[in-house]
Image (cartoon, rainbow, N blue to C red; front, side, top):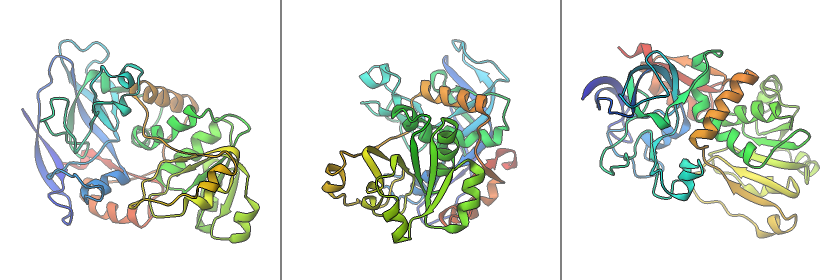
Length: 348
């Protein structure tokens, strides 16, 4: 075992603090990574505060990881020491179910191993995430990262990027399609950038007029205020697709009414309580309400390559690790444009 430095939460109501974590030595198919940058995802906050239940304390969050390879196992063929690599939301899966064989490891029928607060496939070893100096991951779940782009801005692509890229690809959003994006946060700003790069006509649907300038700079073609009743009436039957990134409680029916016939609303945010959906909002326009997780490893690599080719990164604010508790509070307040990223060199 190798002792590494990290930041940990011991309970839902206590701040994160320094922690010495034991990482396994690299086995035959493992890659050891020195973490350079780790994004701060809203999921980190949900987990630390046990808002989804099932948090296994102590928990080390972080699943938007970019770093350099420091050691490899003797059977590793795709990576060598010094390579720039990434790790996303999960680090293993069963490998033999239908979904795994079809490169959809995120939907592993036997349960994939998440990067933190999960179990490896042995069902007994708990995973610890990227708020640490190093991580060891089996080769298949390590991703190549281009050095063309600023690495700190690439880190959030490992979650926010693939979470938005995957549904845009799956539902074949293309040039000329009208795409609405609900919420302009960590996920929403990536949906705008990627959707616009695919040729969609992008409209940001927001409650806050203050975000209009940002939306335009990110590539949105239109900006609409959803608290205005006349605006929502005018937008009825307007969109081919809507991506809903909001994790706060809100009424899905208001947005379903904005879809045209055969329109699709894709849920990416996870509100704290179940939402009521009126059947007639779906039946009346043969509309679909669907959800999407992240992508599989193959698709995540495709996304990273796509973003490198199209010069797409996240808009980030860099922090040191000792600012993480403040960053959590600012994330909850919407006071970040649009993703905090930890400079792991600050963990000494």
